[in-house]
Image 1 (tube, rainbow, N blue to C red):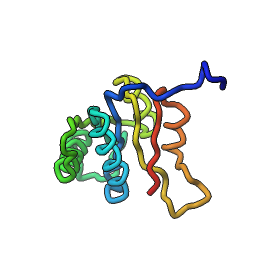
Image 2: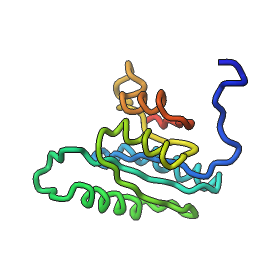
Image 3: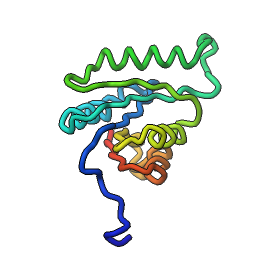
Image 4: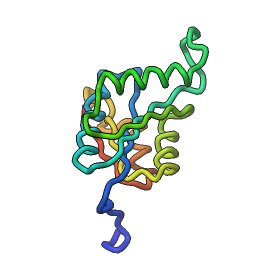
Length: 145
């Protein structure tokens, strides 16, 4: 790409998306903490999202979207982003597609997300992060686990 067509970071960041996998919440905290710190520094709103599966594996969960919304709100309340406006969103479907779709729909300026399992050194990006990096219209900041 030449300088004229290369995508650049916007001068002002209004909305940062941080997708959180609540099944691996202990691993996801680094990306969330980084996203919250970036949102505070840039005076941006933080959109914290999780994606519920199309078919819930846990048969005890009757309303998947409500269950994951409750879990996401619990995560955010247990990990407050002081001085940052936070909104939570639950989507349903394929994680990699829903992250990109949400970012496009909401005109997100930046996505901050966790990378694949850092113990697998041959694959620095997992399939989800790789798809998001390659398909999102905005910049993507990957936090190594």
